[in-house]
Image 1 (cartoon, rainbow, N blue to C red):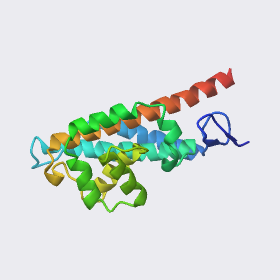
Image 2 (image 1 turned 120 degrees about the horizontal axis):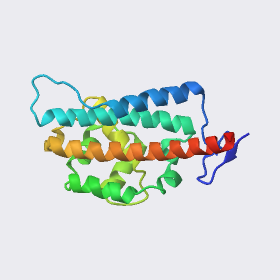
Image 3 (image 1 turned 120 degrees about the vertical axis):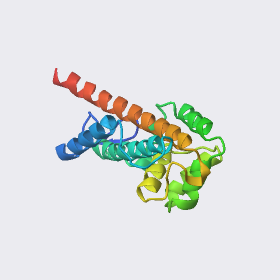
Length: 194
């Protein structure tokens, strides 16, 4: 039975999980790995650069879990407007802007990230402080640009600390979304089971 929930998301049943057990298990494994990542060991890197690489690796893992989460709830990234309306996205954006007031990181990503049209659009909206803007694209462009080897902790003459803070904000916000959304679905499932 298919229906649309209050967020406008097509669902196969009332608990909002729209996928196979395999997809949920892959999400669980990637989520656990992202939560468990506390460090990486890098030889011959400066004390400032190492934490930047850890933060970039953490967003890589976290966004990967987020992609699997979206599969599990049956929502495409470009259709997250109603879901994101439930979260303090403006506060998260302010934290990103505070960490990088000159927009060094996102200007670098825009110039070097080989972004598709949707990603470019949302980064340009962010840089111009315009809405509508899908916040999750700010995480996926960082993941994409790092995974493809263009983004480092010092890219665009940013300080590794800026990259670290930006990745931290993105990681924490994605966990906030995943935790709340998944918990609400599990509570509904538990209520129905009793």
